[in-house]
Amino acid sequence: MKRLSKFPGLLICLFMLIIFLSILSSCAPQKKIDPSKTKIEFWTISLQPAYNNYINGIISEFEEKHPDVVVEWVDIPMNAMKQKLLASIAGGVPPDVVNLNSEFAQVLAQNYAIVNMDSAVSKKDRELYFEGLWNAARFEGKNYAIPWYVTTRVVIYNREIFKKAGLDPDKPPSTWDEVGEYARIIKKKTGIYGYMPAIKFIEDLEIRGIPVVNEKRTKALFNSLEAVKLLRWYTNMYKDEIIPAETLTEGYQGAVNRYQSGTLAMIIAGPTLLKRIQKDSPGVYKKTWVAPMPMGKGNVIPAATMNLAVPISSKKRKLAVEFALFVTNDKHQLQFCKLVPLLPSTKKAAEDEFFNEDTGKPIQDEARKISIKQLFKARDLSLGLKHQSDLNRAIKEALESSFYGRKTPEEALNEAVKRWDEVLDRS
Image (cartoon, rainbow, N blue to C red; front, top):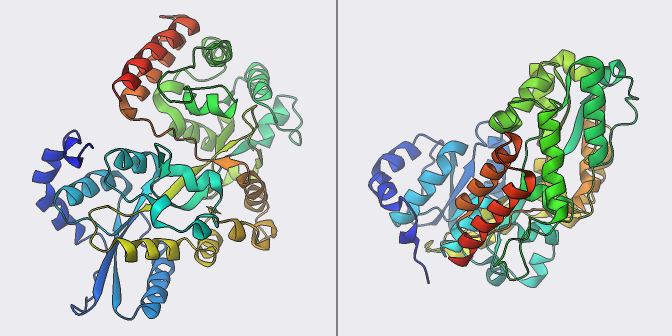
């Protein structure tokens, strides 16, 4: 069994522990802790101060149910969470419950650093969550985190640009081929980019039902004819200047900037982006509408899942798991979804009439209605493979080689598959 000490750079993190922990004290308001009570420490990502009342309310309820327990909440900025968590685990002072995205949860699972939730949580409780979301942090057939809040993506588009291009704004693209077709029409008719993808190639393969690895996860399969066709689709749009030259370098943020400036017709993103557009670009927001994310042959909608994990070095694992289940129960998930355009990971919460109500914000109401329908086909598409950074690098190089004409799509994917097989072989 590999030990946590195998983490690259972990010794450096250990030396930085004192610095990190001193910074932690400023991350959240501290409350007086009764030394006679059992304390559990709860870390979240960038929820203060906007959601103080929500989180503190959950904590108060839990403490009322457990008079001998006190929960200390620490909120960590997104860009600092990884380093601070690794340092705390290495130093033997981990939080008891921690908010993680699926990819990082899988990394910790691979190093046996967090609790196996398939064993820690009863089957009855596991079945309260959507199966595709419960398995978000899966590694070697076991799940290592409890899903919390979720987002799926929708097509956010500028109706005015559609009209200028001669497209019916009431008939947005419903397939991926139509996305490409609309992008070409818009660029030709208006000179404005119709689409700027934030390319997640492996996820794109899964959406389209194209195999990525074999069943044993020992060989890569994405140099198939279908996979080559997908890379050629992207490459041709790049070479024909249908998508911006900065697509690979600027990614999602570049697309957001273009859309908000009125120089991009479509962006595929989570509904939370709508609030940002409304605030930063009210003129563009007035021209905006939304549509379902196109489906592929995989018949799956990608879900971005935030999870709660329990470090295996926590001395209060059973209580920590109970608290994580309490935070993610139907009631509390629904409360959170009413505060921010997110989706719940539990089935009962998702059935609430709230998701189909009209609140007087037509665009956001429509996005919420679309998203909740998509949730039933949603799955976190993180593969949970070891050495993910090496695998990601091989895909990035394949995209660049094809886009920039150094290799054909076939050659680029053959090389990437060779690299993946080498990495998977040492796993």
